[in-house]
Length: 177
Image (cartoon, rainbow, N blue to C red; front, top):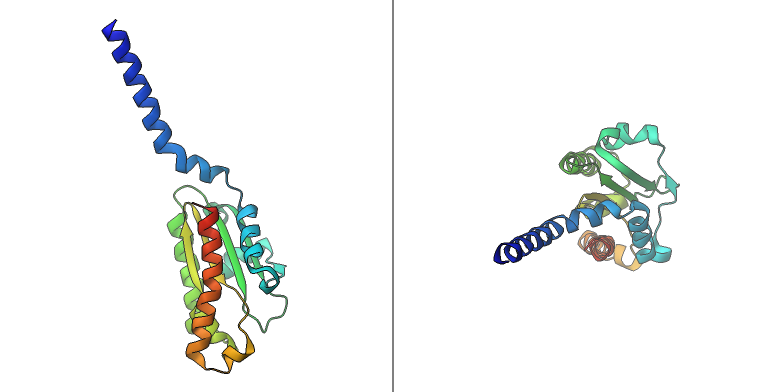
């Protein structure tokens, strides 16, 4: 009888440990990228500027993200080229999260240091960021900077742009707990 009880206890503990160890992974595998993107868009409301999805053939060329790196991807940019508001959202394939982070950091570095930008966008790009969370990676350069802030100078614009990108990071963190 003691052996049966011990076996049942060991089996129960083993199943409990397996369930705890896999719970985060299974939850993330079930999270659809579209729902995270919608949470971000909802957080910005009318201040979400991107309106045009990037064509699949441009993803590797512009962003450095190849098909073997992701399960799902969403990239949206503004239709007007004078604005830089961009959302890149990637649900990574297993083992590819760091490769996606590296690609998006390289893209961000290109924008900040090597690309030709309107002066008003340079400060906003300084506040852009790459966010990684539980198998997902995001590049965000989002939000509307009020005209009165722009008149206060570069430091105020960078601060306001940082606060605007905080909106995306908060939405992502709340959804991917």
